[in-house]
Length: 357
Image 1 (cartoon, rainbow, N blue to C red):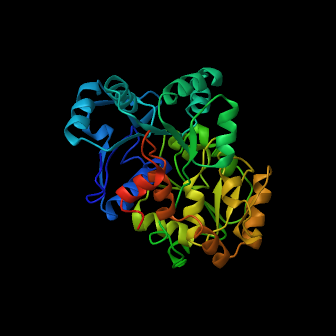
Image 2 (cartoon, rainbow, N blue to C red; image 1 turned 120 degrees about the vertical axis):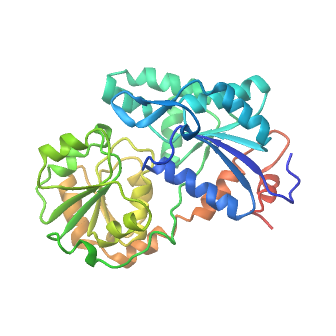
Image 3 (cartoon, helix red, strand yellow; image 1 turned 135 degrees about the vertical axis):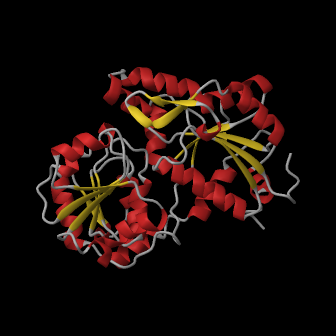
């Protein structure tokens, strides 16, 4: 067990990893960087270490082939103090199998509504999907969930042992800045960032009759279809780091048409860059904008009305100030505190991770 002098050794097993561009990858990557900065050692087990095949109809997601033996060897050699399983795919299942066979306690997190995704793509009944997810998470010490609303919803579906792990934003990477890089486009500029996939309800956005320009950052299985169907929208592909920040900074409104996300980290990234958010009043946006000044955005079942209201009333200073409530350091402390193992309390883990005096 950790001695409190050298920090924690933490394994994070995830089927979602770079070069994917999504909130899960950015969440796990940022978490690891912050934990490392505090003096901990984080080992990711990702699809990049395995032979893999593309997920049918979704080639950006790779399914690792026969990962059990290598996952077990990696964990045995690393000798972690804690194991966190972030996804329910082949790597997550291999790590879970190892922990159950060896009697290792582990935690999990609920990032993605795979039940709804499977229903959208392959018409799998959502009840089946949630049964599979519930079975996957039931043996962990804790299932970490992004928002109180989602805790309540999943509790109604029979999930147990849940704890809140709020999401944060990199407030140094995502900041207000120069708006001129997109001046070649007619304003106002309505921006979308994320996967171009059917479950994101992107057509709800691109088919809107809005003034100015719609710009979409990202890639995915629906991209070619959307580009052909909506030639007036601007598709710029995936962007990372400073390039991604510049798109946020130069936009007028960030549009989030998804109804299936558990949180929607991109909303907070946009706010941190001073851009108001337009969204449906659903899980994720509700929690992010709850209590925010009206200058931070608008939610409406009429997405066009939300877009126009966000543009009309948006205030960049108010957006940035609200985003500062979503600190990654606080979120990382919450993650560490959730590594609750019988016999060791929250203070023990925080002190071991050098995140408490």
